[in-house]
Image (cartoon, protein in one colour):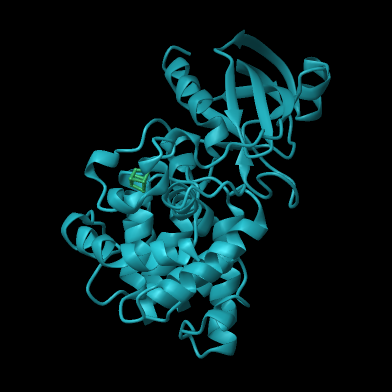
Length: 353
Ligand code: SF4
């Protein structure tokens, strides 16, 4: 009851603050386009606003409509997403675009329940599209919003639990101002992203909700949201090879299932594999290996520890490796960011080769 009261009391000051302080972002406009909202929301999952901006512009200029996304070649799609990671997001977007073309005449549906049936669109994205692009009274609850809710109402629920998220979706849907649901959702997200920060102390002195915020009033802002122990990631150790022959670099296509499926990679194997046998399997019969800096890459559930090698290849046979120039790689091959630093260091060493 108290939570509902706080939500209702804070709606007006929150909207006023948003009106004056909202960041100017390429996907925000007076008349939001549902496709633009969708693309931006998917890109913003797990990626910072500043990092998303150039990707967003590039993606929309290459694929300006749902139809063009539905028909896009997979290599182009992956290239446009290169560096953003979590490639299943863009693959699902394409499947959803194909559904929209086949079942909705190419028009993105406005109803929350129908949006939820599209591939890759969960409650948050459905709520964001329905409220921002179609002014439907739906909540859009992401991590930022959950953090604001936990602090604002000093709620001890574990925000990682689906039940807590569902609870807030229901509460916010009931309390949000029906005439401006999109602005309200964006204002909550904006507050979470710019003032009620995830790491370190929130900037309460600038917050328009300070007078109502229970965590602030109890001087307990750092105690919310209540932290729970994170599950530990699987640790994997790999040997990764930047192989060069006649000014071309070897790339390998990953399997069509599992982590980074179907993407291009620098040839690699588990560290315990015999290097010589591994290279022979790749058709590399004579090479000199020089150690490069080790690298680490963290995925959601896995951590890669990579021992890296620069390989001058003197003899090779046909195999499933593809040999490309750096220009061809930049133009046509999507390389996941896990390999990015090794790639850049390899290119530097190539100049002395
Ligand atoms: S007063 Fe502080 S803790 Fe409360 S919502 Fe505002 S920024 Fe967050």
